[in-house]
Length: 316
Image 1 (tube, rainbow, N blue to C red):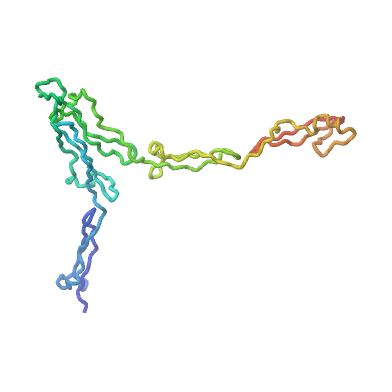
Image 2: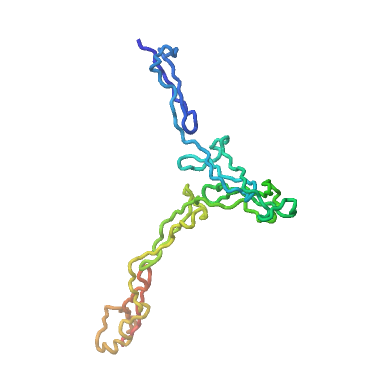
């Protein structure tokens, strides 16, 4: 006869969403198609009902160094950056990914040497009325509001009295107020994509080829050029070289006669016969058209034109 056997269910999901945790499954004693008491199965062969599991690394708070005390003397405060990061590359993520209950403080009190109204002649507040004892104090800048491109960062700016307490801003009117926000730039959001080079601007000799460079995001969608770093834009023009140009006959535009001069026949062909295979047209009343050879083409490439001399000569 067969003995009762242990049966196992499916493993559950890991009980944590990050870091190290555990998962479990059900174990029961089975015999004859029915679930029976666990006491009837061999306890030494009972499978594990729990095992360790590893999820992605948990986000954690990362703190920066404390900034300078906001007060040159007396009591002030100092600030530091507190960011929620994750992974070996310390990627900054939303603060909601970290445990808010364990978030470190980003502000603390600080105290420097007591304030003196004059280094050689300390006076009390009552003995020198009308002297301004307030000053602007400011904290460290927050991280940039964007992870790429241009964003803003902020800092806390307040008017403080000589006791370090917050005073009305009007009490610091005699001093320029430090800026509480400023523009910050992180890695550009876009990247340059160079298009195909054009054909060379000439068919012979030296010329230029050009191409377009467009700014695209990481989905290969074209975005504003301001999203890309202007210092990294690819070259959009460069030299090109074609085969050497042929020399154009400088006289191509000058009429070329079939003879050295129009009365060539009278002076050099007395009693002779002209070459009647070249340029001979139909005879009309004893006269005929004479054509000279075609001149050089006006262009060494593509379209151009040629010229030749056409004259009407009589029988003399």
